Length: 530
Image 1 (cartoon, rainbow, N blue to C red):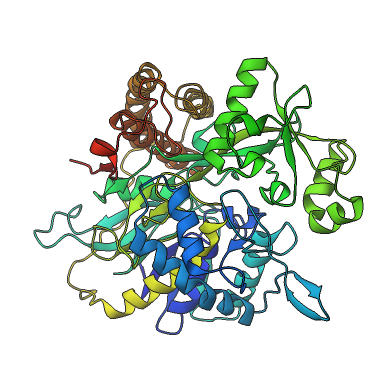
Image 2: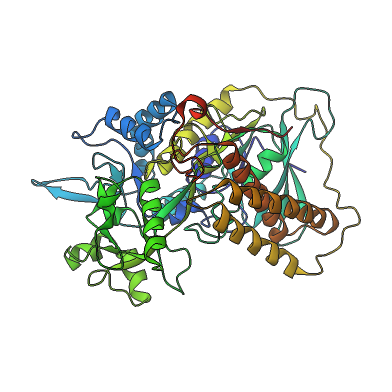
């Protein structure tokens, strides 16, 4: 058994930012199931929304966030994150991150982007690879901190709690079981302060902008130990993923529309004006539903994002990564529109936390996409997620240091026992179930829903949970099996949440209840085991 003052599960912007803050006060283990840079953060193209311009204000950023959130944002949390943002941005800059600048009247200033739902330019960016630059900056700094141990190719299996060990004391987190993927052995890590920063669950869906690591691990682990899960019905579909047979999960940043890109249908029409006066810069939920409706109405396979009216030099300089990637697939975005379709992108709900990232289980914190602070409500405002990760990492680190911890010797932790399990004999079972979950969720729990589709999804997921549960207990654990177990749990939480919300709001749109019902549903959807 290894002991640490802090254990962080996940190596994106939230997890690494927390680890850097905590490292000045004790030993930190950062658990990541692939390489350190294999995170949702590294895939983020657009940037970080933050008030840095004299033309902008905290009030405007708060208003835009609350308007996008469709009545479910926690205004106090919104204000806290928005107002604390500039100081956290300075932390990144002090670590060596250089945001793009431009020359204005003989002096340099930040080159701010604008995205859907924002009333002002406030998105700081590093070309179109902001997340990658942030990830590399944080990993470089982590490498300089001897107090931080980065455990790559290690996957968290389950949290260890007092209740699970049968102790009649206040339930709290005591540690975590972790699979060393190279040896196949399960290690026991002891800590009274566990931070989940595992990102979202985009791989629950057949089509997603997320990397393969986004399998809902943190939400599933928290659910199994009784933490409250909220608002899982609100899955944001990014309106513009590249539509190409050989392109896997490649996102066309909302910043392309922010710089003047226009969505057109197969006939070349600027169709968004029919759905919203803001046109192609409407919030993501509106744009995704409009594209979905346009595709179904016309029978086309995709729509097109057109920025050909901009100078080729501007496009290549502002969007070098997107430009080069499209070019590899035979699309010159400076000369032809980009074929795009919606894809699952961001989990707006998650593990319920307070303003400091604390969950309903003592000693367990959640930050970043895996958590639900109340910032996003029923629909996330573009580029608010990296901001939330930064601010909440700082707040959680501060709170952890203030909160008392139990004696490490108070409750002994048992080693992992595998019992009489055997190696998985047929991997095809795992791959088939994985594929079935993702297709089922795409067909029945997508951008537009009905009760009948949701009920069918629920019934099949219950059967799959039983099948996968039996598989888990009878065979030796592997990364594939653990991810499948988490994936089906996250899928079931999304469906259960969607079934309980008998209205349409934000990202949850159902044909059975197309209106918003503030009398009954202007509240969170809360799920708690038992």
